[in-house]
Image 1 (cartoon, helix red, strand yellow):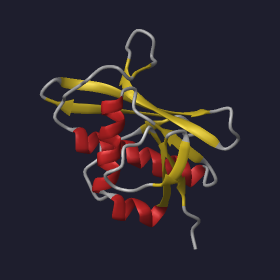
Image 2 (cartoon, one colour; image 1 turned 180 degrees about the vertical axis):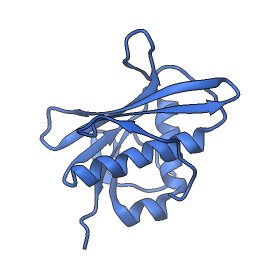
Image 3 (cartoon, one colour; image 1 turned 90 degrees about the vertical axis):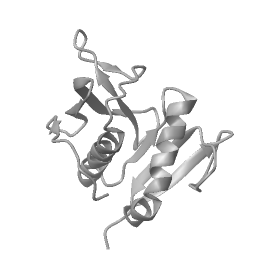
Image 4 (cartoon, helix red, strand yellow; image 1 turned 60 degrees about the vertical axis):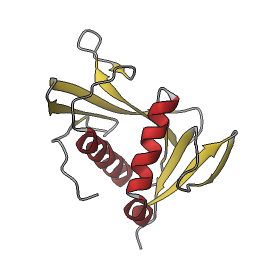
Length: 149
């Protein structure tokens, strides 16, 4: 995606990324964390505002900082960085609410042509997986970097 992105800071193993959203509500620290799941090679993408007291992700806050496309592009940049280091990883993502999952679906759909150049993308419906299609309601998403030819 050739969209503006925020500068990223990351952990050495590229499991955690941090950036700062800038907008009318001020500077909001964001975290993206890749967490191993109980399935080998599958990582959960956790994303949200950084809780300044705990240092953890709060994925319930609605920031409304007027920069959602830039934030999305920055999160996608972490997916590229993570899959550069871990090319066989599958990444699972779902919103903390149905409306957030819908926003993720809309973001994927908006850039689907570009996304499909680099990633396999599946949508979860009724506890089953299918190739991602636009205008379908999904409960979650799985993405994997396509092998470089």
